[in-house]
Length: 278
Length: 322
Image (cartoon, rainbow over all chains, first blue to last red; front, side):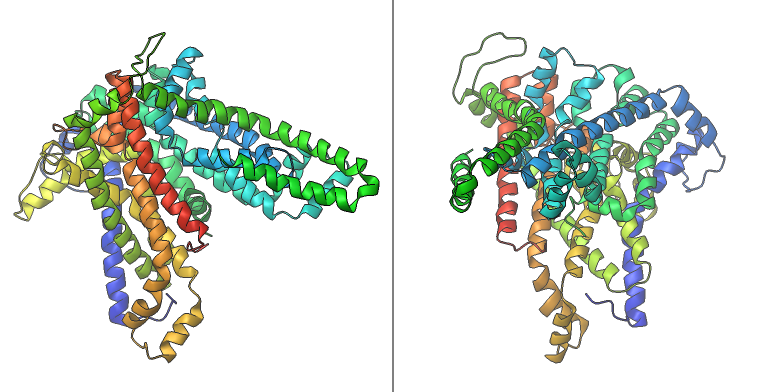
């Protein structure tokens, strides 16, 4: 709809509805942070306020960091996300270049395979992937968390779309300059398709930072758990009695992505919607 | 898989053209194309190997497990036809899981799409606080679902939860939301809408931006003075294709719900909030019933593939706004 000047009544109605829906969206966030600042006594009291009567935040956050290996969980998550993303870009960018710019026998067939891969939900593959990791004897290692994701059909698809838009003349010029095909991928294609690389990176990191399904299957060792699995284990241990530190831990896990999102909204929206929003 | 034939025939044409026009210098383009093909294969090889090992062999593996009597640790297997599927279909737990997943989607999809559309229309109708509202509504889509589920559990807590407290203060009935068979699934659906409405919103906002402004001018010339007339005659019809896309993408997200079930209800009480992905996880990895788990995975795959192809088909016909 064109942004027309709304009548005062309409403008008030607009803000009224949006403030209401915003409140619905924000309540779980506000509640999480609020409980993370309260003492156990206050949490179990029958009166409610958003701000704590007695500031207990230091104790709760200290407990979330020291008595639970939360820094370890978050470090694991960071490491796994970084390894997955690095592998995905290393594997997908050359493949996408080959599909976009080179002619070779079987190319269209391989692209069809990428499209079929795009169709497959990863959870369906979990049983055979679990068996594969068992056979490779890598269950309960970082490798088990990374291996299933080293190739991303979506990454190949997205990069290919962007590479195809880069004029062939640029590729020819690079060849005349003596660049080999691999150098063209990394020195010409990837820098020119940087928006796609950034969008894909955000998509990948958000997906794997938040993933619970596969880590739940692949690792049992508390030292290897990424953040969501870690706070799930923390919750089960505490049996819901120690809300303050649990909420502090949840806040710390959610915070990095939300802060990054608020700092770079446009990129996040593009990345999370698969580049379908410009 | 059948794409191999057209692929070969399509490649044959340019090769003929090259030979025809450059017949005197046949060797140069041919060596050049061999060089190019070798690079092509070299650059795609790692991706191809991983695609086969991590996607295609596992898909075959799921089907083999689903149609055989293979168990964890077994070194041999024999095919048992549809026995696993028969067991699944006659199992009350699976039927509950399938029905719950569909009921959940039927609650989440209209709720998410309508709320997303309404919010997108309201936000785009004026410049005031536009970026703020957009950012706020998009937050749950990226927030770690496991952590947010823990916060929702505290909100829904029967005695210390904010929701029961507020309801009691208003004189309304309270409930043990996650432990009651009648409320567990609807509560998960509300959380599902909460998670996804920002996603629907940004897709609709992109759809709104792609509507040519002169359509509104034309509508005004035709007498659509009131904003409701412009909404009815221009905005809603022009959003049709986007809406279809949003419906399918949100449906896919609804069918793939796992984290909230795992954290909040574990499918309970009874089977009242059990959903397909949770069934696949529990049967395969907690009860170690590989054949059962694989059969449910194939049912799930069939639903997801059907929804995705529906969307891909529509995008091919260019009804998608892009």
